[in-house]
Length: 262
Length: 274
Image 1 (cartoon, one colour):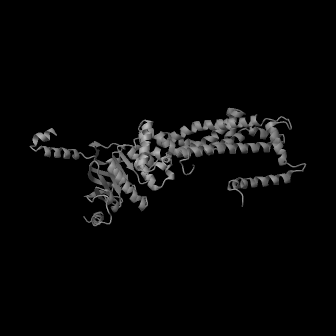
Image 2 (cartoon, rainbow over the protein chains, first blue to last red; image 1 turned 60 degrees about the vertical axis):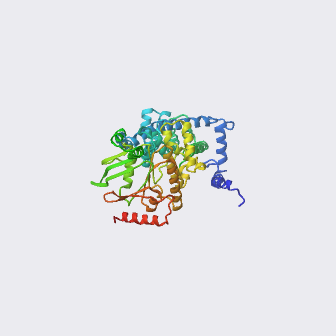
Image 3 (tube, each protein chain N blue to C red; image 1 turned 180 degrees about the horizontal axis):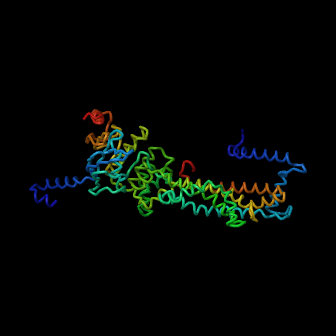
């Protein structure tokens, strides 16, 4: 009752994971043949993975390398997808003939899951990071494309009239009206795309890639290092969460005019 | 002018009067035999039939009529959003070709740009037309002040009430030097108190800025409060059935006998007993 309202949210949010941690501890600690290591062992391993000095094995001090490798592929693939999907989506959305030419094909390819592209990617790009990069590109491409098309197509017609009667020339209408009006939708696409990039990069790194968070957890599984598998999962979760938070903050600032976002 | 003088033996005063009336002869807006037809489900619907309307500079004209009488269609043709099927629309004797900043439109649903602040919405036209940044900023400030929204200059449209949004919409066409202000039931979505206040503010701005206003409404009282002339229209097909001049001095009292007499007269015109 005397708690400050500012602390209420974080406390409530922390209660469940703390309980889960306690339950994890009591179900695994002190058992010799537990499949899952107890939480403090995972914590120690995480420290060793990040800074070394505890076990000094092949995995020590490698976390930053793996995390950076995954992040560069995820953001690189995402960036490339945005670079292609944004202009393409705007063209498809605004120009009838391009829509007629490209939209049916793109819609037909869309239901093919990204994971189904993996074998083909491995054949074309070989085993290694290039396949993972391609998968990220593909995974982020569709959400960005679809939402951009939707955004530029669903601009309120009234805004075109308003711009025209205020003296905006037809050629300037795209920059002055279409682009800002479709920003919320475009942003939704970017956020979905980034989330998917992060999912896909881990899958992409699980086959024949030497570095990356996906690679390290697959390798650890083969060596029965369950503690490292869990560490890898935790880091993937935290980085994904941070990356989503960051894009949310950017969006909130860019879209502060929109009652649905700001 | 020279021709008129040489043919006419009139004295100097008469010549002056004639020159003045000659200047007034050129209307700011001239709607000549305008017909508008739409294709609708394989049928042709006549929205407006052979409309004729001349509006002098500085006049406040209300178009009134039930839905389907073509009043909004006429307004949208003057704005340049739609083209006439027959006849012509002239502004200063030149045919209207598409929308333009000389004819500012105020929509019932505001049509503000949600991503721009109040000030930037008001400066949108001048900025889009390439005015220097400094001038745009001064224009913004002046017109934000004029509609009494200084405190809300940096607010976004979704943070404003309906009345404030409509003030922004009016200010943005004035800031863009609109000579004719076209208003499509601009106060129709506002509550009665706000509507009355905005009507008074609009009249004040109209008088001060010497605007020409073409105002569509379906409310008889609103037309009588505002207009120099009320143009009555009827549907099926849309046409102009009466053009009433209102000489009651402003501000007009809706409870006065003259006001009521006019209200009755316009009611019966709208009901078709003319």
